[in-house]
Image (cartoon, rainbow, N blue to C red; front, side):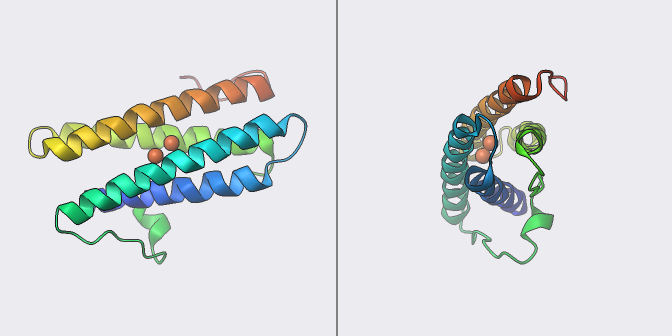
Length: 148
Ligand SMILES: [Fe+2]
Ligand SMILES: [Fe+2]
């Protein structure tokens, strides 16, 4: 259950980060980037709901307390100084989430097939998010900062 609380915190931080970026991204050709950030924010919110509902189903209490949220999360809340910075921060966060969720899927293996299946669904989406951010970074910076 403690582990699912870290997933919940990670998703909440993703919602906050993408929402902040969707509102504040500016500069040349930022419209399409803002739209992408907004779409990701919505999808992270779906993940947040899935995880919260799973914790509830398992008899736990989803931890939405903003106190300590950042330390429960696997990824960071980073504002980014400009458009390319924002994209890069999201790419880093998505890759951390992907690594974290892959590890958890191995951990949950046969003990909890329901939770494992949910994490696999979420992981697929995070992999897409990472690809999206990678492509945006290439488009806006010219070369990817991080290798896949
Ligand atoms: Fe997510
Ligand atoms: Fe994501």
